[in-house]
Image (cartoon, rainbow, N blue to C red; front, side, top):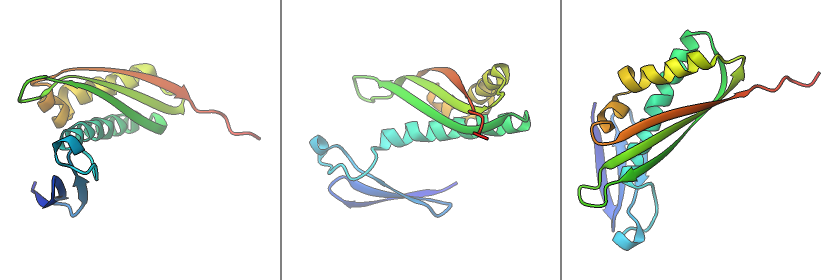
Length: 143
């Protein structure tokens, strides 16, 4: 896997992935940035959220769970001293579907956290990561 980050000006950078996608990153104004993009540490948190959501959706599909919507909400705390690593991360899954089995959802989240999500496992070296979820039943269509 390869990536490239190109500095544009001030604290604005463009990250390019090996798969050909780009994202703008920038710093906060108090650090010389212009708030034109996501912060690099936010990218790490977003990456973890995407990684675990990907795993959970794949596992639930294999379990024949009918997921129609999945949102992962993350909240994190960072150390106050440099390096300001993540010290706590909470991951909240909001799933919607038809007859979703809470045990299957719980199992999928645990498998992602403990075995499959590389990002979670790496960040877990410095952060205490917790998870929870809620299931919203899919509303029956009006007839």
